Length: 176
View 1 (cartoon, rainbow, N blue to C red):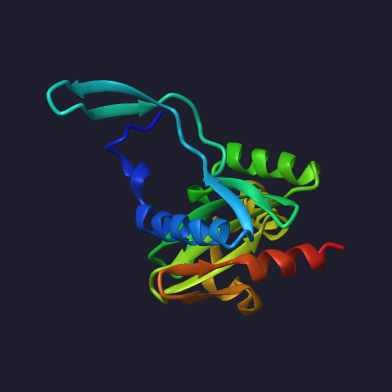
View 2: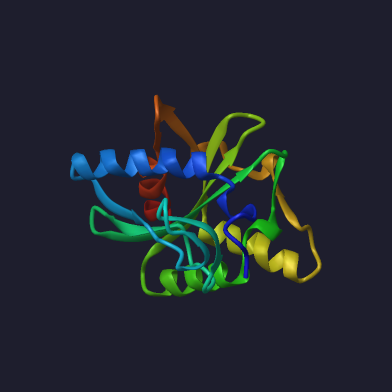
């Protein structure tokens, strides 16, 4: 299991932007989406300050967010890369399994991917992600190139908000 001081807090700025967006969606009655907390077990505590200085993750997380958008159940994970590709090693088998099970129950699963090189956010549907995942475990390419991300699923950002509802709608309509 990873430790709290490990790479586990990468992308926290991305998650903060998503949290602000989700708060705005809730205020406007557009969606109810919550961050899924990862259970941790404290190892070192500072009793004077009441802080956890070292902890480990008790179990593998599923996805970062889960909720409902206008009656559609959704789940998604946020990924950030400073490369011109998204490494498949950033996506774990237990996440793929959870999203697959979620989709089997008529939910919508996806990734929100931030390419810091281009300052662009993309919506990647689970069905497309799964194609790359399956290819990678069968010996194929171990990443998704930036060029393979569909510009139609480029997310518009206004201020501090990552407006991804349009992409969910587009994804839902394309599977009907």
